[in-house]
Length: 299
Image (tube, rainbow, N blue to C red):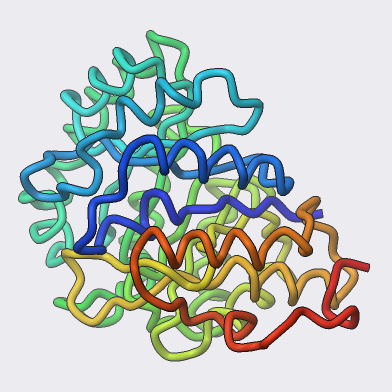
C-alpha cells in the first residue's frame, strides 16, 4: 500500500494564470476524497502578492474542515503559521530549500535564516496541535546552483527532526533527478528519518519521475506527491514543469500490484474537471488515451 497525496490544489494551481474560485476548489477536493484520496495539499499560507492563486487558502481550509482526508497547507514562516492556525488547519508542511540559490528565490532569504523562521513557525503550529511535516525543496538539483550536495539535504533533514516533524518530503523541484540521485539522497537521510516516514515530491521535466518513484518504492518509500494530469510547477524555479501525474503514478502502482486505495474509474472525470478549471489540456499519458481500457484499471 502506498499513500498518494494529491497536490493539484496547491502545487498544481500555484503557477497557473487563472484564479480558480474558492467554491470550485472545495468541490474538487471533495470529489478527490470521494475517489479515495486520503491526503491532499489544498493551499499555502504565503504572501498573496507573490502567489495570487493561493490567496484564498484560509477559506479553502475552512470549507474542508469536516473532511476525513488530511488537508495539508504549506507554511514558510511564523506569520504563515499564525494564519494556518487561525484558519483551523490541522496539517501543515514546513518548506525550506536545500540550496542557497533557490532559498533566496523562493523565500527571500538564505537557508540559515529560513531555518530560524521555520523554528518559530513550528512553535506556533505545535502549540496549536497541528500535525507537522517538512519538505526539502531542490533536494536533488537546483536551477541556480546545480546538483545539490547530499550534505545539505541531510542538514535540512536534521533541522526538521529537531523541530519534531513527523514526515520528511524530498522534492525534485525542477524534475532533473535520476534514480541514482534518489538512491543517494535516501541512503543519506535514512539515519535521520526512517524511510517509512520519508515521502517524495517529484516533477517530470525530463521524463524520469516514474523511474524515480519506482526506485524510491524499491528502497522502502511509501509516500508520494502527485497531481492529476501532471499539472503544476514552481514559479520561483526556472525550467520547472508539472508534477508527476497522479493518474499515471496510480496506474504504475496498480499494474505492479501495489494498492493505493484510489478508484481509477473516477480519475478520468476528475482530470477533465481539473482541465476545465485551468482552461487547458493536461499532459499525463492517460490523458492522451481516448478511454481507460479494463487492462489499466485497478486490479
